[in-house]
Picture: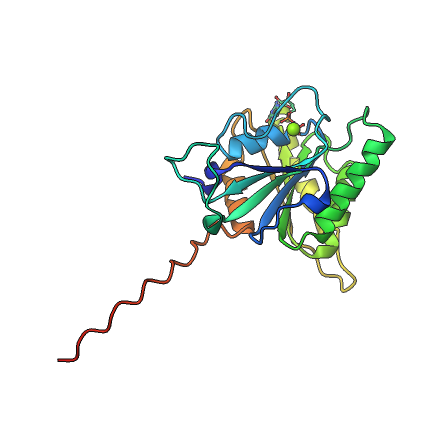
Length: 237
Ligand SMILES: Nc1nc2c(ncn2[C@@H]2O[C@H](COP(=O)(O)OP(=O)(O)O)[C@@H](O)[C@H]2O)c(=O)[nH]1
Ligand SMILES: [Mg+2]
């Protein structure tokens, strides 16, 4: 069973000063509104209503955090989680590129997202969700170029691949990988950028995305067992 299935709502943040004061690794999901981000998060976490999926995009301008770890089967969903057992946070970033967002809201978005992805030390990796029919729009590139200098991994998920034929999907994936490979630093070294196809509708790429995300936040490695209480020394006899 995927560890992502443990996800539960943690907090909502509208200003960087309110970011959770946690130290566990975070992974952030970014994408244009309508890219299929909420649908993908819900499928990966196996929970229908975790991230709000809607047909009227662009209404959320805040970062929603979900937690993995620290909650148990018997707990009520409103019970506080055990912070000692918190493993990682998932940050659902506000969708961008929604045409009707006003200038002020756009600026707010730019500061919130740009600052968050560039400065958040706990942020281990970025997942960039793009509609497979039109990946790498200007704002996707902006996101990618904000994050690239951190040297941390970006995993691109090409959503709604069911809208493409098999051969279109293959070509799209190859072109996306080539695009990512074209980024090199001053020494000519590539970046840790990966890409895959995904379809929530046809359930394509779920295992691949799950494995990648778990690896990026270290959920693939079990946490060290707690130190056992030191047992009394046996009597020398
Ligand atoms: N065909 C298809 N449609 C999808 C898929 N994933 C999401 N959608 C649709 O795309 C629209 C936007 O999805 P949503 O998850 O709300 O996108 P978000 O704005 O990025 O969170 C909705 O109408 C979804 O039903 C998919 O894998 N295939
Ligand atoms: Mg959404």
